[in-house]
Image (cartoon, rainbow, N blue to C red; front, side):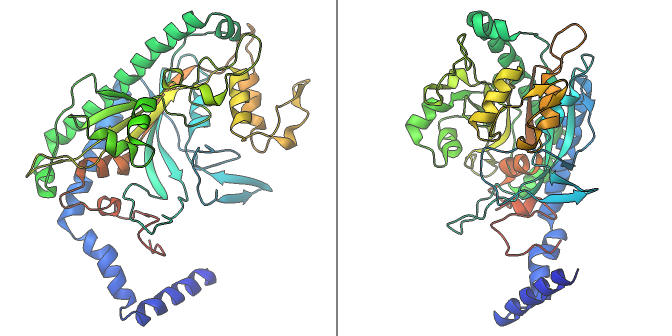
Length: 407
């Protein structure tokens, strides 16, 4: 613990040098928030939203999964983070959880499970803004309600390669089911907030409307051409008249489905030729409605998800393409000959490759998503009394806020 005390000593000294004090810093950045009206209202809204989402998922027949906080593997993420913290235990290194994506997949092996959900631990050491800019959406330690639902289509690799029209029809049907599922989830959460927290919304200077299905949809490749990459969600949101809308088909994580990807001859569709109608993933974006003016705050992504890659061969090739694996696993007599070259992915890939007594793959075909609780609250509550994501959390660790976190 000595090095923590040393860090605090230097931090306190810098405060004194600037004419402040340690007590002043804690009062200004923590205690004043804890005793204020805004955090009371925000936490009341949070409680209603989380309870409603959990009730919705239980009523849909999904099972609650345990939280996995350390594991040999975690979500590698498509964007950069500072590093992945590692914990050593019993001679084995375990990484902390970015998200529970791989555990969600494996928990759905049981064909009787309709799906699973979990208040997933998420520790992502986001890189500080290089422009020293306050980006309201990031926390290095946050809550995400992670969801995965079985599709139960059973499409084989031979069908995948040789019957593209049949497979596309199935995927489009399942994409509609996924969008409908998450729209109903958001509607359930918003309805609960409006039922229980009208006075809290008023205190924060914001309004909320129950969204109607279907939410507006924007294709990523089309809006990218119109607006460019910077602040894309916010710019696209200006053309949508509602508080919630979709952006679909954005190139992102290795487990988000791309189809067609592996061709009948075994070659792969080049990345440069992927279009949004080949990428079966989706984001929900949300905007705050300001109570006094009726105007909207800039849109922010609050939920991301996808139909998942479900066949062994595409899963391996996507991991290779994304440079998560440097070589393909080699199985021999139930073992992996090159397991030392696969980092922590050996156990996961063994499970992916397994077949049941009937010769069919056990790995499930699913769709899913994760809704960031703090991100959602910030997106619908900011603009009145709420200025940054720290304001809706008691202990939020925004990488752009403080040089050191005290709680």
